[in-house]
Image (cartoon, rainbow, N blue to C red; front, side, top):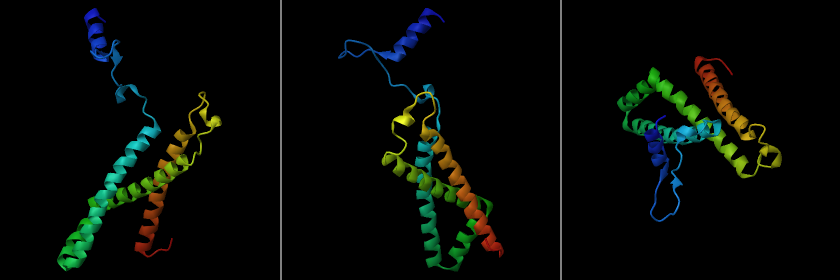
Length: 159
């Protein structure tokens, strides 16, 4: 590393402010953080919320198609009967179930569960890391369960 490179690095990390006597570091960006399950959950919770909003628009499309007539309903039904439509329905189901499971976990955390002194041991991973993976796993398992039951019902079998 050259001296010029080091000065450039310091200039980008520490920005001089005329109102402050000392140099202050800039806020760190995501690149320096280790990606953890709670960060993944936060991102997925926001994305699934957006996807659920888009799914609500699809429900509205279905209601309008049903009210409009047979041709509009056939267009709607043929889209959802195609592979992209089924894939979107499976993703929408997972989004709904993940959002539900993650919301339940947030409610439990808001009640103070798993935040006592025994869970603050720095030698071990926090409890919420394992529960984060449990939430993701349970949402996937519930999605599979819903679709297996749905396929069995449609094919004439009983769950």
